[in-house]
Length: 218
Ligand SMILES: Nc1nc2c(ncn2[C@@H]2O[C@H](COP(=O)(O)OP(=O)(O)O)[C@@H](O)[C@H]2O)c(=O)[nH]1
Ligand SMILES: [Mg+2]
Image (tube, rainbow, N blue to C red; front, top):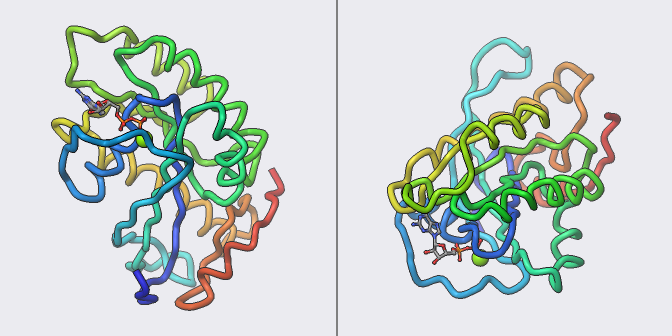
């Protein structure tokens, strides 16, 4: 998409074990369809979507609409691609940490993914949303909502149960993450206190170059 007509370029990254439904989730979000036929993602890939975010203007008070170009990076969960994906951790501004509600092991592995994130993201407490996938498969469910919510609470992050088949809460999970990322940016821009993610509120052409990484102060 060679169209520069936006205010922010926001890069979000989906991560989690192979098979939890990352690719299918992102496709549901960008194209509003369920696709049963994805082949295993090799390495990394991304999908894009334009959204409008309502935030505050320069004075920090009045509401303003920003045009956001979302880049949703899709990782391959396999161990052999790990070095590749950790490089991408550093460039992302927010993370969709995903596990499969029908696969207990994928839930146990959330801790490992979180450690990877804490070690490699722009900050030790990056913006993350925990996403349980395949909520439509009720009879094979093996992770209790309570377990997942407890874990999310411990990390202090939001939790959503989603289905790429029905579309349930897919959009809400991404929007919630985008809000967190944008709030952090607004804070660092207008409040001067926040830990700044990789992007900065630079407009138009400079946005791409603004992927200059900044270590945050948290
Ligand atoms: N029933 C159901 N199946 C899903 C859902 N999301 C993904 N799947 C299936 O789970 C499998 C793995 O999905 P995929 O997106 O390739 O996982 P990835 O390796 O994490 O990218 C595929 O067969 C998908 O059709 C969902 O919400 N519900
Ligand atoms: Mg995939």
